[in-house]
Image (cartoon, rainbow, N blue to C red; front, side, top):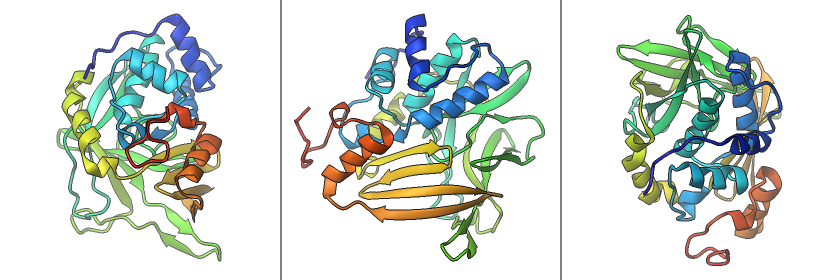
Length: 303
């Protein structure tokens, strides 16, 4: 599995910017970085369809560009943040890749995943570090600054902070309040870290050691072969009003209401796999012929 990543050409940059519907300036400023990240997460979904369909992922510029830009697909963190780093590098941002461990949201013990389970990016702009990430699904819309650590950073998508913990940095999200159809409110269910309730939920932790794509090679191979990652489809995309997600045969709608409150709706997609594939094209722009499918799928071996 190749991991050599080369630079984008000027023509490829223009294609990429068109893919994420960005038409603004191209200087290496925080305002440009903010808008690039927003455009990216509104245009390119986080999805595991390659892993689900047994399509081998390679972290080369050619393969990633063909998939994300020309086939108009999304991907997992290794793919999306690698591609985004290429764009940022061309524009003069000089991003650095960093390894992150994801906090388990189910066990409730504060257990962490593998040290390289997530690839995230840091950018230094005029001496100020910024955390930028287009490959973590439901997360911050705009880069988070390292200035005034632990101070809440309010965005349309939620409230976030970066907390220093020894040699590590922890990206945290303030636990959202769910509002039901009757207007009743309850806090979103989150595991208590080490058994201690908190209004903040840790999402992942990372250090400041720069990494290369090769550093994530073994973990990417593992994720492509582990049944837990292959079990079912997942595709999620930010929208101006919230987030749209397909998980298995369900479509989930999350609406941001402001003041860290959300409204959620889940609906079973009737019509089986055919309906799911139709929704992927209609809601996420992912064509049926742009994907691979596992044995047992009605679309297996068609493309």
